[in-house]
Length: 166
Length: 141
Image 1 (cartoon, chains in turn orange, cyan):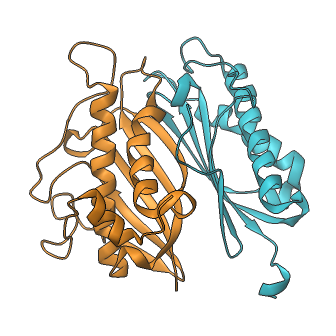
Image 2 (image 1 turned 30 degrees about the vertical axis):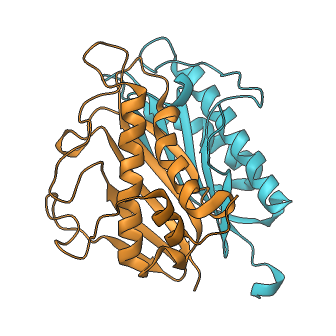
């Protein structure tokens, strides 16, 4: 396992992390704030697989039908959402290197009733977080929930809490 | 399949526990399916009990002793349901009853919400997400 800092890992992996300072987070969705800090716990607001200009990656529903999204597409959407989470963490703490560890990720996936591989989709996010923060700090407590719909037709949304170093 | 996740996280007196499902350690599921479909309220209640027992196991793993729990902060109960099913609280009661039996009525009383999900990991019918408060450790007193 690498000992490189999270910011160095981001450069190694060539990740493109969005800047949430401008335009402000949440403008398309309503009145909200991007994060809340209480002591060392930082709660990050909901994130979806969208670019800053609102282009969605793989909108739709996970399922087994021909028109449904595949697990691979859902995994990619979850991974993309986690890179957005990195942007929100940077906004909150200034640098990813200020993260002591991940606390929790609650992951919502739009699915058909028959779909049972919610956890294989959410792994897209958890794998990326371990890639960036390492095996010890990057693991979060987690749950994946299949839901009927998400804002604007996105297939994935996650809320996360991280612990800061100071 | 192993995921890059952990079972619990402690920060100060708060213990956050990852999602618990009605599965035995070998992955055998109790009453997979959906409430309002093939799973009855009684079966859902039993599944919620097992998920809560698993939560108790993780708390013991995290704190060493269940006596270190000073309160249950919150429980989010996700139930896989058909669109018409409305008795979610009767299912979630299975989790609340286990916590009450283990920790007593005062400590176990938690903030709670129950939500109907379209699907849950591995086809489980119930998932419990909880945060627990621990007694202050020596270094925090």
